[in-house]
Structures are given as C-alpha cells and as structure tokens.
Image (tube, rainbow, N blue to C red; front, side, top):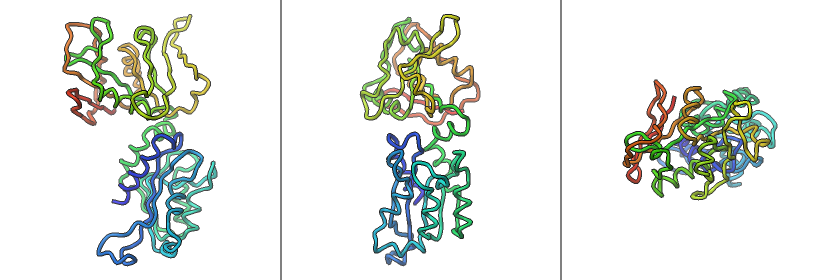
Length: 312
C-alpha cells in the first residue's frame, strides 16, 4: 500500500524530473503512536519535483512536522527507487536516511545508474538499518522504463506509433487520412509530452508537414528529428537541435510505413502503439508488419477506436 503511494507521488515528476528518474518516498510509523487499530501512519512524504532540486527522500523528511521528529527512530521509509549514494547536484540520499536514524528502509527497485547500482542499499545496511528490496519491483521499473533503458542499453527507449484503418491501411491511396478522434489526438499529444524526441521520415515530413508538438496538451515539445538520405544515399538525421540530442532518454517514432518498418526490422523498439479506426478504405499504404513474438500489453476502446500497446 505504501509503495503504491510512492508510485502515485513519483508520477507528479513526469515533466520536470527529467533526465532524473521519477521517485516517490513515504515515511511511516507503527500505529500505536497515533492510536490507530491497524496499519501505520504516514508522517512524511515527497517526490522528486525538479532536476537539480531535492530528491524524494529529502522532501519526505522535510515534510515531517517538528513534533514528529522523535518518531523517526521507529519509522520505515518507503522509496520507489534505490536511494542515491553519490554526490551529484544534491548530496547522497542514503547518507540522509542514515543520519535521520530510521529503523527500516523499503526499496521498490535497484537504480541501474552506474554511480548507484546497489551502493545506496549496501551503505544503508552497513549502518545497521534493515533494508527490504523488490516491493512492487515491476511497477517501479515500468514507471522509469525510459531512464532504465537509457542506462542499461545506452540508447533511448523507443516507441513506435501509428494509426490505421480497420482493414490495415495508414492512408487513402497515398493521401493523408484523419484516423484519430479529437480525444485520441489529445492522448497522442499527452504521450508526446512524455518523450524527449520525436522522429518522422523525410517523405512524411515533406508531404504532411507535421508539427510534432504538444499543442493539445501541456508540457515541453519533444526534439523534432527527420530521418532521410544524404547525398551518398546513406541514412542521415536532421534537426534544429542536432547538437543538443546527446542524453535523450526516449524517442517516439511517428513516421510512415518505411520508417516504422525499418525500426521494426532492425529490432530497434521497446513498445508499439497502434490506434485502429473503424474507417475503411479501398486501398493505400499498408500498415507496418508486426514482429514475430510480440506481446499485447494493453487494449483500450477509446472514442470508437481501439488502441493496442505491444511490448517485446
């Protein structure tokens, strides 16, 4: 229950915590202190609001009322991601936990970042604090899937996305076709706000002039990337922010069939999102062919359309 609260808090950092991970923390004391019949009482909670500012643990401890400070010696701190053990823009959170003298620490999942990777957990244990690891581990990893992929595989988390007709076409005889509803279009813009960069192919860019922004939602526009060919016929990318692309943790691909299929054939994808409209056309460009062994993760019926999400 308390780890779910950590996850709920962590999601508040979706826009501003990047490139840091989203993290939530909850401090709980046993029920006798508050006279409750069962469970514990939350005396502090927080999340990582913005990169460069206090981490979730710092904000959770800061929210504890002065009159409750003496309860920390019997408290458990729940945190969705392993407390950091290194000096970055802020001091190590594991040192703060040790200094506050809590009795127990419950961690959702280990941090894959090279400067952490279990060091925070080890340091807290060495200080004599009981540590439990792996509570709602899959959910905690899923929350920061982009951060994890970037640090474990040294590439962005890649989402392929397209809309298609009920009979499997993405356009009407080569002409652009509106398949999303106003509501599902808003959902796409919400999704864009969660990604660092968005990519289309040269043909799609020249034919449709897509804005590739988040005008129907709130947040920062993703970096715009166009994939094409150079004078030697080799694949190349152009972007007004080409020099700023290093460190991007997530990439959304919204190109035409050739671009999308090239990512599928190369195995360069983590997630595929397909919106299927009840509309049909007599012919056009066929939707990309899904890879073998793909797993359906979620199926939603939204505004008359079906949105299916697949994972490897």
